[in-house]
Length: 233
Image (cartoon, rainbow, N blue to C red; front, side):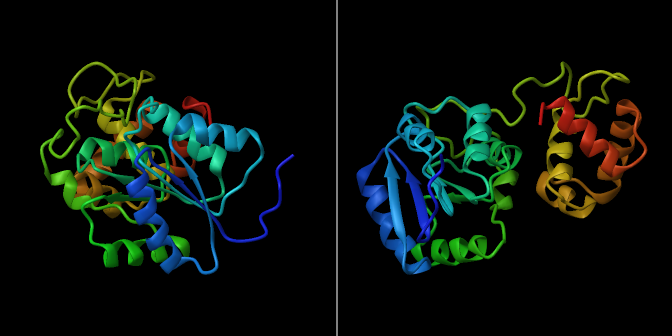
């Protein structure tokens, strides 16, 4: 049985003790009073979750020794609901940013971010906001990724063909279409989708028209519901 949360409980998941210590200091500036719980990896986190420990907020490193990619990140995020989950990572790769978006995280903070900015971001997310440094999307796909770590995939099983291929009617979505549907399902407007993916508004509308025809739906709501069923949500 899950235990009730008697104080604002914040989770830190990082395998480096010095990073956890720095985060403790920053989090104490945001949440006061606060109970901070630490885990040095996903396995340790899952033990806490299996024991019924609940959290109000979670900050997780994307490149942990036992991290197995975006699918597991999505599962962990679901287990932590309704707590906001924020990535705190060395990576400044746009593919990792997109993976965090696809997994439903509420924020993505590179570890190079200044302390004062991190505090402001955490406060914004605490009150219901989101933070994603979309300027990273202008970089090369792998620029800024830790060299020793594989990339979490934002779309683990993309359809064959180029990024902007339309895909066959009734078939699997292309990688670009899946990115658009991920953002649509998270409540983004057409303009916001364009801002995230670096597309103009007419291009986004064209993609959505093709997606709707391919999925056999007539509205955004129908498309989201069908997409969620496709993903097993």
